[in-house]
Amino acid sequence: MEPIQTSQNNRAVVLAGGGARGAYQIGVWRALREMEIPFSIVTGTSVGALNGAFMVQGDYEFAKSMWESINAGQVLDIPGFDESWQETPANSLHFFLSNILRQGGADPRPLEELLRQKLDEQKVLASPVRFAFLTVEYPGFAPCILDKEEIPPGSLVDYLMASASCFPAMKMRCIGDKRYIDGGYYDNMPVDLAIEMGAREIIAVDLDGVGVRRMGERPDGIPIHYIRSYWNLGNILGFEAKTARQNITLGYLDACKTLGDCQGQAYTFAPGELTKLEALGLGSLSKRLSPLLPEDSPRENHSLLLGAARQAILRCLANKRRRSPLSISPLAMAAELCAQTLGVSPLRRYTAAGFRHALFARWQRLQRREEPPASEQSISLWLSQAAQSLSEASKTAYCLRRMQEHLAGTLELSLLPVLAAAMPTEFISAFYLLSVLEELPGQV
Image (cartoon, rainbow, N blue to C red; front, side, top):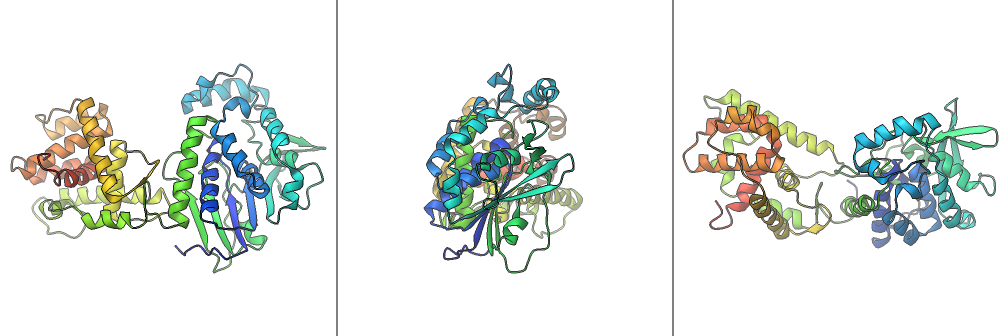
């Protein structure tokens, strides 16, 4: 990825739609402020348009405090509202299907009142930062591009609400004799709009929201820095303060990796620390269990099974790679998968030593809390019965014990590829965890 050019004055920030996930964009904004990365253009859709308006106004502190204390009642007027409905996606979907859709969508009046109180249209207009966003006319689905300079005076909030009218979950917006719905019906992340406005470098913040993604012809030589979370940012209708605060942190850390010197994909490492982690390698395991690794290795009698195991491992790593625009080595992916499986928090910045210590500490806590699966069962019986009801951490523990048995000479190597092919994520996690435990006397 090309480095960010902090002196460039035709840089655009593009903010995608994604409902309650919009808190993530506030974390990116924090990073831009700390790294003193200027921008002269902002485009957005839906919640991205709302966040973009506050970015242009320059009111970071309010935007941050609003998201950190948000709840559904501050955004939507929902008759019979009970916050427990947002605890699971299934419950929220059922609630909206049974109560809201019949009413033509939830009423976003609380959000509108908040915007009218805190958004200063004159400050937005006076800002040197250019600002444009999208909504869609209904029922023709014609896009409506709104530049701040061309919006009728006093109508900024009206059109922002139109951009964020996530119909049919929310009521469509009526302005004059026209009806509008969410801009995501045309382009949920308006990169092309930013280019049309003269952007020559783009920071695009994706929320993995529902909507159309347009990819028009783009001139060569325009770097686009995509920032997207590896982690699930939650329900797009789940406006809840705890989740919002976590997403702010994730946005900040991802921006530090994409635009700054931090490293990692799912996890964040201080500058140079991921390189140190990779240098630690897998110790002696890289030779002792080498036939299972996805690199070229000698073919043996059980080559078909080994091949299936390697392919499963490669697919697992490829799936992880696709979840984020950030790129790391296979060894680093194994370390991150191990942390993810054990439940290590992604909400902080790690050193190499601190990360491996976190893995070990988490492993110790899990060992005390969970009853390990019996290793006396045959692998095939365990996979067909016990494994179905176990957590990822317990499956990782089982794989690790089987590896230890092989290293002790009590289990044939030919049995391990069965585990690798059936549960590659847990197998990779166990492989890496074993390399960590081997460093600690008395742990293997």
